Length: 59
Image (tube, rainbow, N blue to C red; front, side):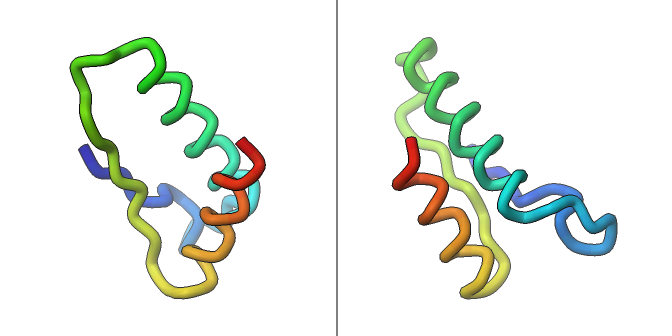
């Protein structure tokens, strides 16, 4: 499964908040659902990647 960072572009949802939510919810989901082997968070650009990597380190 792959998920883009929804609404952080044109709609202006804060990327830092979106990344923390996405990483936390993905982690929680994977802990409860062992049938899914991999999920991908899709980042558009280096800045989004850095923000998501920082969120991942927080988890």
